[in-house]
Amino acid sequence: MIFPSVYAIVVRAGMIGQWTFSYVSGQIPELESESIRIRFHLAAEFATAVALIVGGLGLLTRQSWGSWSICYRWACCCTQSLSALGTLHRKGSGRLWCFSQLC
Image (tube, rainbow, N blue to C red; front, side):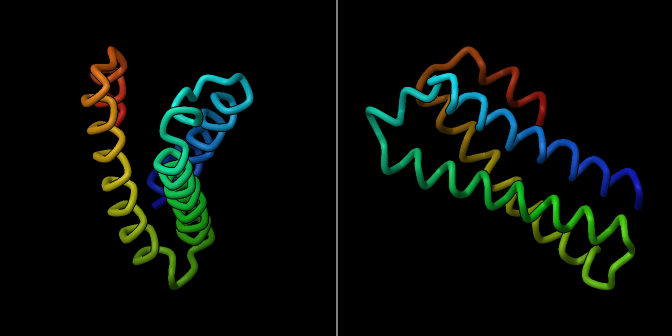
């Protein structure tokens, strides 16, 4: 279970890094136009990322809660990914194809 745990940790740490970079560099225009929706979306993204990192660490350290924890959190991650794809599609973003390839 090393690969799933490392994958969960690395990819979700990257997710936190990507959103942080986007926020700091002012690349989230929805903060002005749809501030409440995007703030809830960002909260869900960060909560999912942290949960997957914790689940990955649980798997990596062979904790008893690690395997069921990571499965539940992957389901949450899939929900977040589909939500993000829907948002990108609705906006007609060219990043839709690129993002869908990562899921």
